[in-house]
Image (cartoon, rainbow, N blue to C red):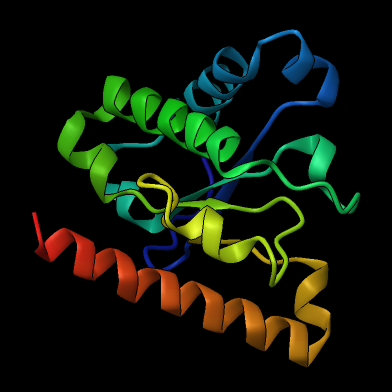
Length: 151
């Protein structure tokens, strides 16, 4: 039993290899990873956890999941969370995309309904690149809020 740190936040990264993706295993791999990674987490602590979908094949390669691929994965994460903790809890968990996010890919990723943010790696090392990602994410967020208010 570890020490309990009530203010400690955790990012759980999940994702499949390129071979697993090509074999059509994205949903099942992510489902198993969520269930194993959160097996001993109680509902009370769920608010301190962020999930990051990081396809292994995209880490440091410059390859980025298409927005549709990211949405499928994020939807699978949300479905696994709902199965474990209920629909309301699954909607409150932030699910970020984290596979080679760039200024060119941020907008199309952020407009996906289940993509709640980005976990930026190498692109954060260049101020201009990171600033453009932040701006792209903010613009996408404002646009999505306008679309929500029109419903």
